[in-house]
Length: 156
Image (cartoon, rainbow, N blue to C red; front, top):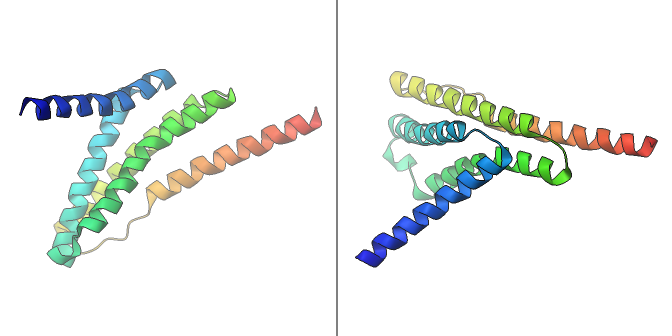
């Protein structure tokens, strides 16, 4: 019993360190990561409730849950990847990483509200996929930055 408890504590510590250390090193606000994490959990819970109410309990499967969870967890990596890529390239992209974090929080909040509307009305509402839009915007910004930097180097 004690071994299991110790193992659980160390795994919990590893998970926290994997989040906290990059956030502090890369200069991103830990509070925002906490809010994003809470919103991700809230979106998953309200999404499950929405699916249950609109499509019935058979619509909820472990495979769909696992895919959704992996998708949501990967979102936590986006701001870290942007900041680390910038730092690795010698470019300060902290502003873009902070912006990405803010937009992801906003997107998750938007999704939660959409789920709540569907739960309340019992009807599926059309939702704009804000997260994919945010990810594509970030990718587009990074591509533009790389191509502009490449063009500047060609001129030199």
